[in-house]
Length: 254
Image 1: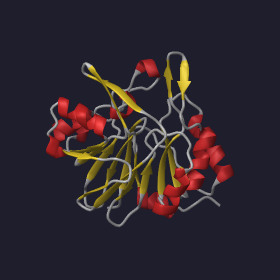
Image 2: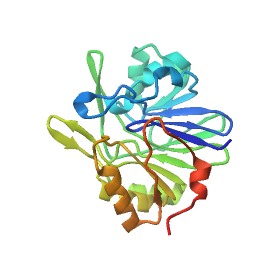
Image 3: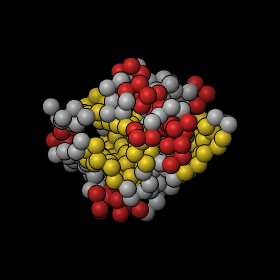
Image 4: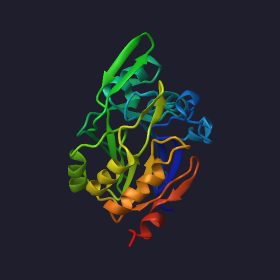
């Protein structure tokens, strides 16, 4: 069996390695009608066998149901310091938390997770307090590859080119849209800029994320990517699973 990728919702994914290690990223399953994001078709119970949960930052649409998944499954939580404090306050054992800052690497049964910087903010309410810390992105490499880059929630910045040169990701999970908030569209990485990020990263395959289902952002991103790169854009639907070895074997667009 190859490495599989399941799209959970919005920026949420599940990666299953060849050995069966299950890594969940930014599991925003509940959705938010007010922000234009419907619930995930993936039920919380389907993630009870999760081994690791990665959280890029504390925003509601990324933290999502991470703490509940960790408590139910006994998975490790890999996150920044603010999300760690929130998890501790909500019943997660400190021994089950891998505390990451950009540049740090954690390895879970052969799966390497490299935390990298983004241009964004992590600021959220936890109980009666506000917490803030460094938001993250992740470079994830299961045994035998491929290397998968999850952009977290970032705007365009030149270090993305450096990440491509250093880590050479095969697959990029990239923000291309955003949410509605107080009558405005909050889009840190618009489609045209996401295509430039993809060019800098050098990935063979891009999977758009972080967009509302009524948005044209994925199609706009695919058109922009065709102008800037030879990468293939593969849009996934919530609940869909793909075999990454098969997707990569199809190669770049001609």
